[in-house]
Amino acid sequence: MSRTKRKLDHINHALSSKIVNTNGLEDITFVHQSFPETSLNSISIESEYNILKLGAPLFINAMTGGGGKATEGINAQLAEIANSLHIPIAVGSQMAALKDNSQRASYEIVRKNNPRGLVFANVGSEATIDEALACVEMLEADALQIHMNTIQELVMPEGDRDFKGALSHIGKIVEKLHIPVIVKEVGFGMSRETAEKLLENGVECLDTGGKGGTNFSLIENARREKQLPFFDEWGISTAASLVEVKAAGVPHIAASGGIKTSEDIAKAIALGGDMCGMAGQVLKWLQQSGQQAAHENLENVLSELKIIMTALGAKNISELQRVPLIISGDTYHWLQERGNSTKHFAGRTIK
Image 1: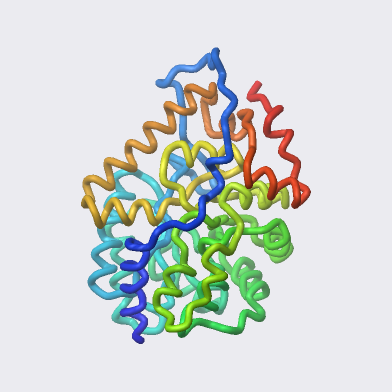
Image 2 (image 1 turned 180 degrees about the horizontal axis):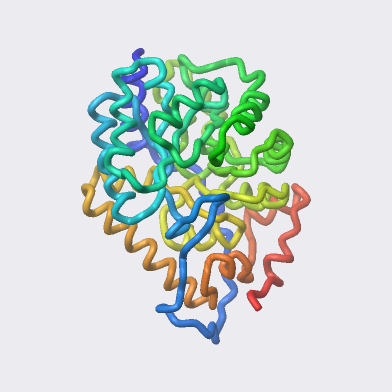
């Protein structure tokens, strides 16, 4: 099967597949504040991620590219939305363009339609330094995402089977590049051990990519004759991943994996995220209701985030990261078994 056909299959399966796992954020409950001492007009949602200054703690996460005119059209619309809302946007893996020059346009359209915005390039953990540099140059990118997708590759009929040397590859890329390098999971979450290994190799920016969003095991299993169903419920939830990565001491954390609402964003930031990535939900809005509707929905999400922060008494993102909350359910059980204390979340205070 051609790479282009596979990219289109991924989009179609992503739109039709059902989520079989939760992202764990339903286990997070904010402690209500009767006297928040705030006003909606004074709320700031500006954020920082490494050296990047963000107008809002939200970005359109990696989705696609390399599927010819179809994916070029999707990326063109997503880039226009990002440009209008002044939020970053990441492209899907650029390996297709490195292998086939005719696919470059499906990625380059993002910079064309978002000339002054923040754009994230994207490549796999197997990439060489030269390949990583080529991806960055292709988009004049402000950051580079390096995705880790071991489970997807193992389930993918034509996927990789050898994952040796990935950490050293990543370390060399981080050393060479002078922009933030964001290592991201692809829907299966990050453990504390993974985060610690990445820190040892010079990586300071992570994207949790937790379980609960687009399930690439389901997508790839739909393309297999003999399925590997045990991977369909594999992984660490977005909520648990955030706590694990934060406990490892990672300084810059992006939260993704089933982020769909303003409440999801507020909870993810309160658990330690600096920004949140939305992908599958944005793609569904775009494909089912059109570009204007997707734009309006994202605009509403940011407006609602301010309302939530007002209720919590959090005037800015830094204060939102310190509000008290209760962790229960499966997330509580996971964190307790993994040696992560949850009590400090309940006893926190902004003041």
